[in-house]
Length: 154
Image (cartoon, rainbow, N blue to C red; front, side, top):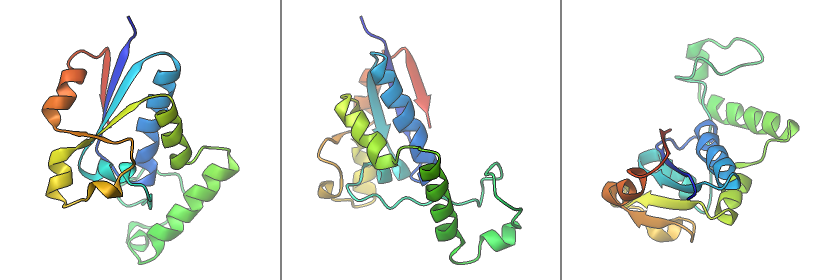
């Protein structure tokens, strides 16, 4: 009997996209049965066209090449600059892109469920999401999560 992992992904930024995909692909490689439940802003990670950003606002632990006062972090264009810097740093360190990690999860048969209530709430069209997306509510996810060995909220 294999182990299982359930993840609830609630964030839709570049920095918060890594944990669910890294943990899921690793667990799948170790033989776990894995399901990710994408809800609220986490649905951004299920879109065919990813346009994820990173922001240092509200993230005091983000390492910066030089200290930037909070007021300057709110200046228009700073989020785009931070995103470009982060993507460049990740690429220089050989970190896989979110698209690559998501494809790895799909290849490893990680189940990815979009929260139907959130899809309806934000008036998303299912055509915006990857073809591998399943749809269901919290009850459908809990059928799986209630029996998991590990369940994480990210």
